[in-house]
Image (cartoon, rainbow, N blue to C red; front, side, top):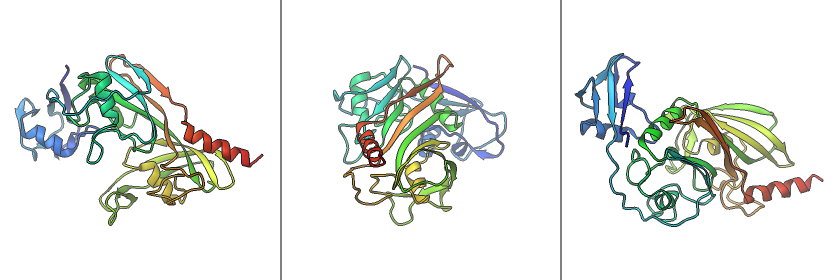
Length: 304
């Protein structure tokens, strides 16, 4: 399995643990790799506070994955595409992506372990094998899953460079006046409710969402959202910030709704990227699920 990636530094006077950014790999994970000698600069070991110079050659070695103590479960998967390098999976609403406190079974990873066995990338560790990026439990739609470390690194770099197309469909409260627009508002952890995110200038990251109206109703709007960045809860937070929270979102919107929905009506409908091996641009689409279409049918029936 391919485990190494070489990076030529293009910045001056920057700490190595700040410079190396791979989607899904935290700074602490990078620091651990540096401390264990898995990351070299010009073939030499360095400390986590090492300052890079332009032209430095950084070699990142991703160790072989440990045996994961995750129970493989025979859970049906809606696989939109699969080859020897990656999968594109259509995740149903209500499924958690990877095991965590309170959710050690029934996750996408449990299902992937059964489907792929050991053929999943090990970059994100034993709890998140193959997971390149995530979507929320109650968001449905397309996810990229890497089988090899080479594929994982390539896809992560594309996400970092904002070249992966990620398009969502949603129904929000209220009627949007503009046909399209751009929400450019930084997102960070809520200062009192730590499980929530919010638009803030304090300890935040840039976040950009593009939206387009597909259809308007009396009290709701059917929209398309395209991510330029991929922050936690980004679309949900940005639509709340606009005064138009996603229908069914009990965290960022009303606690109840007239459709008795549990979870936001938000679907990752399209994803496009350059294949890590063939180098061809590929794009995939997943139809909106039944909970979504049922609401649209209801709303469309009201205007007749």
